[in-house]
Amino acid sequence: MGSRAAEALRRLAAELAGAAAERLAADTGARAAGGLTFMEVCGTHTMAVSRYGLRDLLPAGVRLVSGPGCPVCVTAMRDLDLVVALARVPEVTVVTFGDLVRVPSSRTSLVEERAAGADVRVVYSPADAVAMAAAEPARQVVFVGIGFETTAPTVAAAVLEAQARAAGNFSVLCLHKTMPAPLRALLQLGETRLTGFILPGHVSVITGTGCYEFVAAEFGAGGVVSGFEAPDVLESLLMLARQREPAIEIQYRRAVHPEGNPVAREFMARVFEPSDADWRGLGVIPGSGLAFREAFAGFDARRRFSVEPGEPLEPKGCRCGDVLRGALDPSGCRLFGLRCTPETPVGACMVSSEGSCAAHYRYRALDDDGRGLA
Ligand code: SF4
Image (cartoon, rainbow, N blue to C red; front, side, top):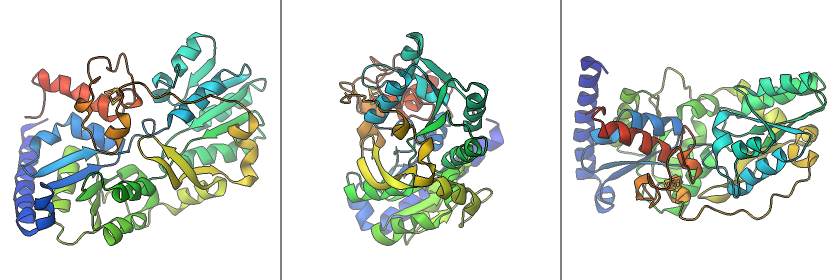
């Protein structure tokens, strides 16, 4: 980072310190709660916060915790087991994004299944999986649909393409989740008194900001949709600290508009409808996932294959659920950095490139080497 950029960050940090001090002087509730606590709910923000060492720049009385923003990390163990069970079906090729292959399920992982002979492949786009199905008609190609509103429209587009190409050997295991619902679940839980959210930038490109209004209106918490560079996140925290009345604002104005992207939402709504979804750490949240509409049931891998994954087993000692609710800092897990490292992950939060434990581990090492921001 150049000296001008570092100076700009220091200036923002100083402004944040001033705004937080003023807010705490005026806000008895926040003072009683021990300060201002903000949560980022996007895995890319989690990585950015750790990569840029932003927590080191936070003033006294301001805390930033990570929430359920990593799609692989919030996937329930029962669903991970289902992916593995599908990989064991002889005619099935399981196709997924790279993050998922090393994530531990109850008894094994996709990478272990692949070593044992399962056909597991990694793609960069769901369209690649449709092309694979067209090229290999003897295989049943199952794409694992994981992700929020950022990813779901591209998977819906792939399903429409498969339909147009009459690719009868293509299906999707739909494990998609949608973002506003877990914010309500967290606020209702009230485990941590949250002053406001750093809202996800990529998801909000699609959803717009109307879906977050309940955060301010019903729960009195603020929200700022943030970009992903260090100054973006600090400016978003500054905007949150300056809010005298809770509101939903956009810092990431170069990409996010209040109305979002209606075309992408229409793609999603053609193929999928809201459904209940099971979140690691939060349990089943009504209406927080996506399921195939009846007209597209033929592409639903759950209906096409009857597999029984067995009872899920959570890894002993793993505190991913607490980490994903912002109730525990990753280093508070007794396995962190000892039994659980990116090379020997015990839980999903240590595997995914957007996982909180992976972010803390990776950039903690950088800090120890003296290569942090400060
Ligand atoms: Fe789970 Fe490992 Fe994170 Fe602990 S450090 S919560 S075991 S992923």
